[in-house]
Length: 191
Image 1 (cartoon, rainbow, N blue to C red):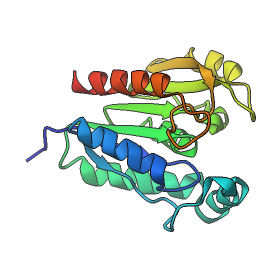
Image 2 (image 1 turned 120 degrees about the vertical axis):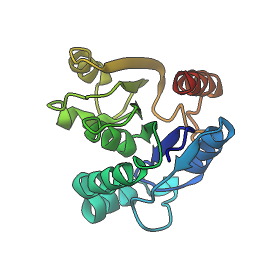
Image 3 (image 1 turned 90 degrees about the vertical axis):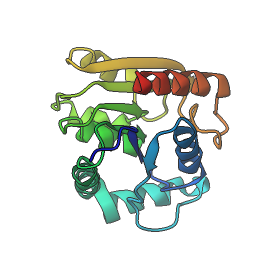
């Protein structure tokens, strides 16, 4: 028997399952979705002040290949229970969602996935919505967006904000923009 309620698999940034992930877990639970937040780091979260350490840990101890296998295993396990599965990722999690876009999920929502630029050969088989902040310190999102706009199933948004605008625990958080985008996604999922 499948569950009619949508499942959101929430994919974290390099920091792990922190207050940011708990916030969005609560948001999606409040919208009456089931939520899984896999701890891809398999450890307690890093503090935001430990960005370099968190990045190094992810790249050396986890990496995209291992994390992708974990996420795909979760998708495969949950398919027997849920008709609709959505991936929702931030930063590293957004890139992981992109890597899983050839799997059969209902849709993907990816925020600030700068590493997507390394995987532009992927052609999503499901609706994949990619959000980039206009102001990024490590890459030019406009260049990636131009390439993504050539792909079927990919919908891009360049938000006139800085990286972190969706995170209520980041100094660059923009509540109005974050709430508007989140509400739009929740409405889309409920259609």
